[in-house]
Amino acid sequence: MTFLSQSPHFVAHDVLGLASPTRGLRNAGRHFSQFFLGKDCEISTTPIDVSDSLRLNTLIPYSMMQDVPCINNLLPVEIIGEIFRHYVFDVNPDPITGYSRITAHAGARTSAITLCHVCSYWRTLAFSISSLWSSLCVIWPKMGYVHLVRLWLEKSKSRPLSLDLAQYHSSEEHDIVAMRQILDLCIATAPRWREISLSLTHALQDMFCGLEEGSIGMLESFDVRLFKWSQCRKSQLLNAFYSSPLLRRTEWRLFERALPGNPPWKQLSAVTLNCQSDSEEFFTILSQCERLESLDVDVRFIMSQSPTAYSTFSLPNLFDLRLGMMSTKDFESLFDHLILPRLEVIEMRHGFEDSSPQGWISLRNLLSRSFCQLSSFIYGGYNLDEAEFIRVLTSFNLSSLVDLSLSVPITDNIIDALTNEQIRHGSPPLPLLRHLVFSNCRTSDGVFSTFIGSRLLTVESVEVHLRGVSAYSDDLNAMENLQQENLAISIVLYGEIFRSTVVA
Picture 1 (tube, rainbow, N blue to C red):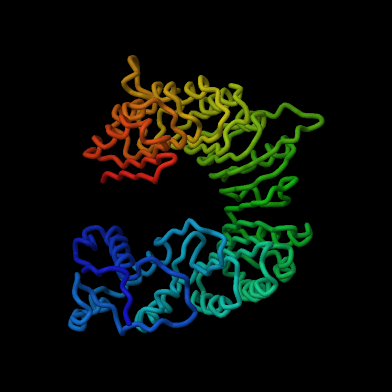
Picture 2: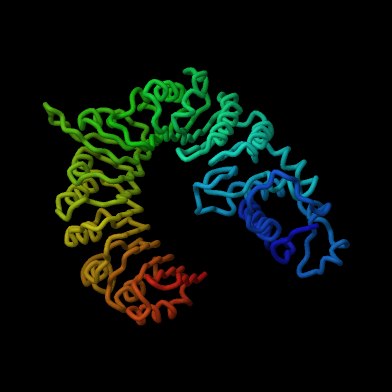
């Protein structure tokens, strides 16, 4: 019995793109996985009855497929291996999280196990490629996963491992038992851990007692959500992580009442945390992070009883700054202390908590002081000083911007300020803008399409959320007339079925 999700197509030379090896392999993988594997379904622990091989051709009845050359004879092992890697790590992103599954990585439903169900040749080949098994994600574990995890880790051989293990409060007792057995298997491979992500309750905190400082020497990255762990158990685990000389990326996901203790701040290149912190302590530590390239924080500053005048300092390698829910004063304090000459990305997910202009002034001062070339600006929230917001968007500090994503209410005033045709003197604002997302557009009909029409020389993709078909008939008609342009347009109509117009 052979299952094909749709009629197969021959993988010809033009599909492989042999003139460009990297592009060719990826194209081959994309076609191969789409036509022969289709959408992945839940992983079965029982082998599937399949034919000896899958065969290629276009719209050929199954009765005639016996005379068609086997795919295994058409492509070299190296290319099939690349296709396998593409299928395992790049195909079928899954927006649904939280249900029980075992996959290659979080956010996917694909794995090398599926490949092993196709035929004996594929099973042998998949087992021989250890990189297919070097990444493992287990969410809401079941007892049936234990033998799969054992197989997975065996087939990874001596490869460095990326592990994502999650077990939540609502887990049944037998699921906790399953996770304990899975943790036993994974902890035995601790010297090979390269990346580790843990979302675990206190019921499992005793599992890591055997980990000692220096026992995880290959660890480069960790992400922890440790629910109700005792401070002693938490410190023991984190100290084992901190002792790795290769550690570069750390993520503390739960809100802490203080900065994490004893991390090797000087060697870190990426930090994600949410915490309360004495402002002087925070800036003292941050000033030591000379290697820091990415910083993602939700921080509540506690002012010192005897504050001193802390001067500005430079983070010479920081290019990505992402900020969560903070008070406007905390934003101001952070912006007023930093010099970021390499800054390229700013994300302010929740924006300023009030409509006062001071936060925007501090942001403009940071950009001016840093002489940076910002390429991406992401801003959300509801409270907005529109005049200061426009002043920032149209300033020289954002003239290098390529990506702009805004979820604040977009008005006619904001669009008019950014429309090239409205600029009579000097250079237009955001002259390099290519990718645009407006998630809350409240403009008059025709204003947005005029804005896009004025930027056809640079803009490549647009996503806009509009409110109702009848209110934007002129905009929608104008967008349809732009279909001959090299522009990708995605339109979301509130209260309507999702409409997407993509122009290649």
